[in-house]
Amino acid sequence: MTDPFDRATEREEELRSDALADQERRAGLAGKTVADSATKCRICETPIPKARRHALPGVQTCIDCQADLERAGLAVIH
Image (cartoon, rainbow, N blue to C red; front, side, top):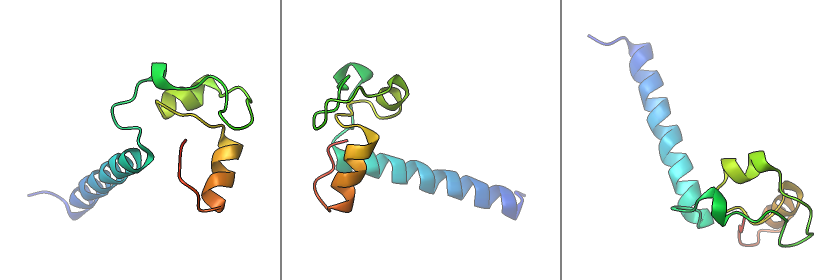
C-alpha cells in the first residue's frame, strides 16, 4: 500500500508536468529546439543568456522584455 504522502508527491509531479506542457503549447514552444532560439532579443537586441535558451527552446525575447509583454497582457513570444 502506498503512503498518502507518496501519492500526493506523485500527483504534484503530474500536475507540474502538465502545467509545463500547457505553458509550452500556449507559448508556441512545443517541439522547438535550442537551435530555434534567438541569441538576441527580438525587441531590444540584448543577448539572451545560454541558460534561458536551453530552459525555453525557441525563446525569442529576453527576460525583461518578456515580463513587459506579459504585464501588458500581450501575446507571449518568449
